[in-house]
Image (cartoon, rainbow, N blue to C red; front, side, top):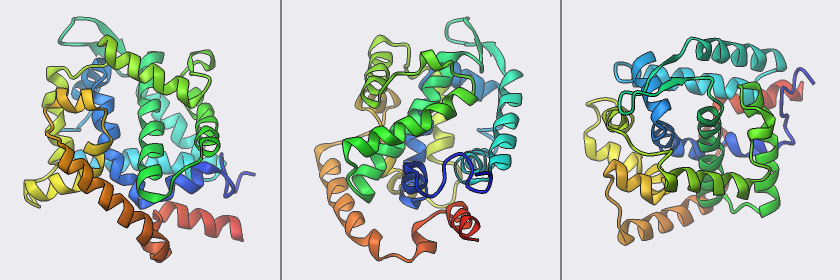
Length: 265
C-alpha cells in the first residue's frame, strides 16, 4: 500500500493525471485560481510568481505529482510541506480591504475544484471521452485530497455536478472575479519568459484558453471566437487519434512512469 501511494495503478487519478496533454490545461487552472481575489492577493504578496514563474510552476507540479504518484511517505511529506506554507500565508485583499488566509476553506476548495475540473475537461476533450461514471469516480478519488489540504469534508460538494454548479455560482455571484491584482499576475502565467515570442506562447495556451470559463476569459480580456473553437475541435480530434500511437515517454509524465516501475517490482 505504501508503495502504491494514495491512489495506485487502478485509479482514475493515475489514468488521467499521467497524460502530458492534461498539463496543457495548467495555465487554465492557474488563471482560474487567481480569479479568486484571496488567492490572487496571496500569490502576489507571498510568492515569487512574477519573478520566477517557472520555478513556482516546477514546485507546484512536484508537490502535485508527489501526492498523486508518490509513495505514501512522499505524498505525506508533500502535504505537510504545503500545509506548513499555508499556515504562514495571510494578509489583506487590496481591492476590498478584507483579511484573507490561505487556510480559508472556500478559497482552498476553489483551488482544488479548478484542478479537478480542468483535468477532467482537458482529458475528455483531448485524450479520450470520459463516461459520467468515470468522471464521478475521479471526483470521488480527489475528495480526500481536498480534506488533507484543509477543506472540511462537509464543505465539499457531494458530486461532480454539484461542484461544477458551485463553481458557476461563485463566478456568477462575483465571489470569483478577476481583480486588478489578478490581471497584473496573468502575464506571468501567459508569457513567463521573453523567449519564445508571444505568439508562440499564445499557441501554447490555446488548450487552456479554450477550457477557461467564458466569463473569466472575458474578464481577463483573452480573445476567443467561433473560428478558434472550431480549430480546437479539429485539434482535439487529431489529438485523440494520435495519442494512442505515441510511445510512453512522450505521452506520460515521468513521475507516472516511475510509479509504474515502482509498483511493478
